[in-house]
Length: 339
Ligand SMILES: Cc1ncc(C[n+]2csc(CCOP(=O)(O)OP(=O)(O)O)c2C)c(N)n1
Ligand SMILES: [Mg+2]
Image (cartoon, rainbow, N blue to C red; front, side, top):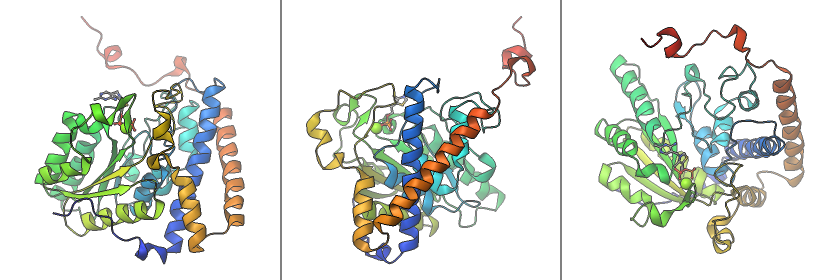
């Protein structure tokens, strides 16, 4: 088994269109999330706001490597970039956070528990680790139906989620069934305020791959080119029939757990260390050095995406919120009153 390898990003350097697509999704997500943070701080969002700041490269790298309409992708709270790269409209985000009845959760969430199940993106589940079993089950069902084809299923987790029983059950099932499954673990050093030292005892979470009998790849998630390359390689291997793949990307969470959290427990030395680099800055530098983009192009995209975000916010704000008097969804207890 190969552990802790980093396929050389050289092959990607020629794939300018793909790299631009990944970076554009990262930029769209960062601009959108900055806006959501502002709206939260202005009291316009009543649920929690959770950002993927610092994790855009690994998230968008995964979303862009999957094929919408064929593959399954179960994003988690820090996967706005992956959602965008996979093709989710910005409106799904603004409508959900702002409570529009036209949104995917029909205005009942005010948070991030949204999805497009019919398009291969299951609705996000907060209970850490359970999305592994959901995606593994979706793949297994397709196999039983004889329609699996060369489809891949992927989901994302944090370092903290690897301590759950659901992580074990889901990954073990995928491994035993040798499913075309990709699990991306983004180790952002913290689970809420719990540091890695209180979370696991191995040197690198990718070591868990050996115990489960799955492929393992570890990458510096702040390095845009390396990250996009490694995630793409994991998807390629899963699609080629090499069984489940575990990717561990090492970053620092460049925000609080949610926008209610100032992350004051993160030491300054860690913030200014290598893992505290912002993958957006690294991506920009690498793409400019490659000649894959120009500074003017990036400035144009920033302007365009800021406008798109403004429009998505304005539209969601004008749309109606759920009306409790005409509610057609009921709790089970309403249908079946307790005796
Ligand atoms: C089974 C379960 N236990 C606890 C929680 C509460 N919880 C939500 S997010 C979180 C921390 C997650 O940390 P990590 O997996 O590292 O992801 P990150 O937030 O760092 O991206 C916890 C403990 C939960 N959602 N599910
Ligand atoms: Mg974490």
